Image (tube, rainbow, N blue to C red; front, side):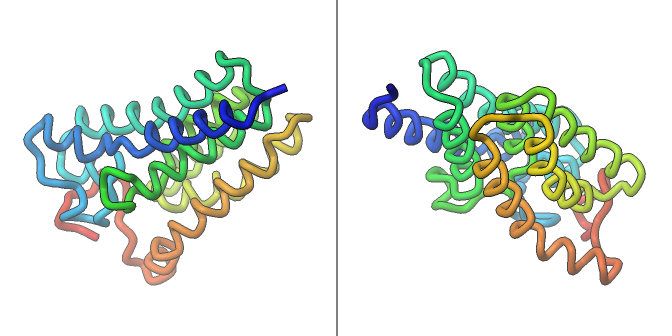
Length: 202
């Protein structure tokens, strides 16, 4: 039986790990402007790409996804239950959205969500990622891909998993959708920037 102190420590650690702002760190490493000051203002890989550095964007993507996956894998290695692993995934995701190191502001969480979902279930997480990739490839809109992937995630987990991950995954999906409400408005108005556009475009 998992002890409450162990669960508490795991959740706090996951939140702190999720709070690490790889977009800001990558921008500093490559001598770029703070991603919160241009484009969408979002500290994430897609916005870093608008600065023209694929390397910085890739590092951001790997870092944001990796921190989420690492939190889940460490919880699993510690012998915590699947239900607790799902809560750890949610905690790491919340850390990215409300980063302690960015005064409780953060990114939209797409890469971190991908990391935690893949760690929770390679099959369901992989299907969610495939939804994102196909939508992004066809539409060239990262935001639309994120919205459709978020909608699909609870369905894929419900279809392929028989454990206690569904509600945490649903919470992550709802938060991703909430973070993209502004993007949806811009999509409908024809003002949403496509993947790879320069930082002076919106």
